[in-house]
Length: 265
Image 1: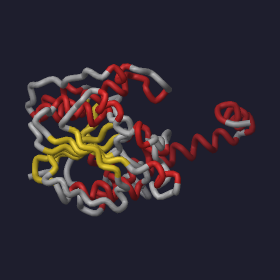
Image 2: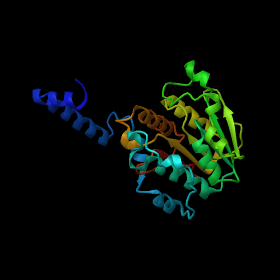
Image 3: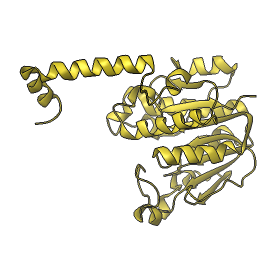
Image 4: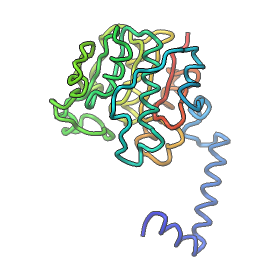
């Protein structure tokens, strides 16, 4: 017996009350910062109601170009509350309003994020990095990778759209070093293991300047107890803050899975 049914049965024996008490104690400990895995992140995240509030924070005027029909698709419970639309709005808004010269997309998959960057910053060079599938199969790409696409499918979406300002890189970020110049906007969305998130971000930060934007996908602080991969991503960001590599606030738009950090001046 598992899940809600098991918990209901435990309630009848009195064990459910102990579980509830434990949760209350854990919540209190988290609020007090006692043995809190997210003691830094809990203080750093600022929640925004919508992308209009994001534009307000930075004084931006331009709305993003959202011409990818896949953002309206619903494939699983993870897509509720227009999650894909919220993600695309955030990425597109940042890229469109910051006039970047170089964008980096770690975790190409079919190339939807790279395409989103390319259409919102046609003047920019968009570099997109994906681990070769054979390295995932060999266990060299961490544990929490979304899927091992065949080589011909990696980046197939942006190629189908004939977006000429996108450059594909096939490399394992555990060994790859960015050599693409100063990065204005970077999206970390490769392996979601804590160590990969930390080290990918650390490499990117070395190539960024004040005012640049570092974005983490699969970031939603409200879901750290529900989604293992989101917990791992948030732990990676927590580790960055603890190491002094990320300072200041991290913005999150409600119902998105995107953490937004601007490099301070």
